[in-house]
Length: 275
Image (cartoon, rainbow, N blue to C red):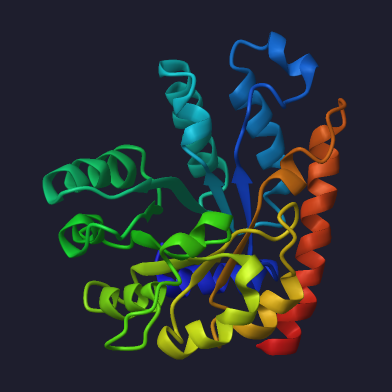
């Protein structure tokens, strides 16, 4: 999926919602656990209930890798189901990979070709040769970690370079633009750092930003849109727990759909305001 296709889907659905499929077997409704593949069944029902309101899904790989082969089977089935039934939805492999060049090349092949995700999250700490193998696939995206919302982000991301005056995350934003462009590179920016989005937009005015932290982590959707939206929206705002675990009864999918619709309606208002 390319830049304009993603934007067109945002306009069509009046939404920039990304639903995180962080599916924990210990948190799904108990009645589903008798299914042969409970994780996939849970995902399938969540997807069917929310697809009308979302433009992206983001499985976090840790929740699948933890159960070994069975988890990978569930992930593959989930990706295939979305591709077959909702082909216009953007798929993010939240894998946070990043290693020496030949290893990154294998990761890129596995997720962007083998599993056919549209994008993958990548840690930039090892530099150019660990990132560029992911940029070799047409209409696929790298989503580079820039300014995250976790408490430990202060350990490194906000360290100032005495020579340039830039914080580390700002150097990541600037340097990485030599590797990719707005057509194949996005950045992760946490919603709990919404007030810093204005400065981020000065560095990457046209890129899409993947913004976690709205909902359970306390980030404000209105503040994210105010500081981070650009002329092509430029935002994918993720909500995981607040949607997929909103209910644990037999109505869990219906409630998830209602929560997704609630966010979509707020996004519709914000798009009308800022676009």
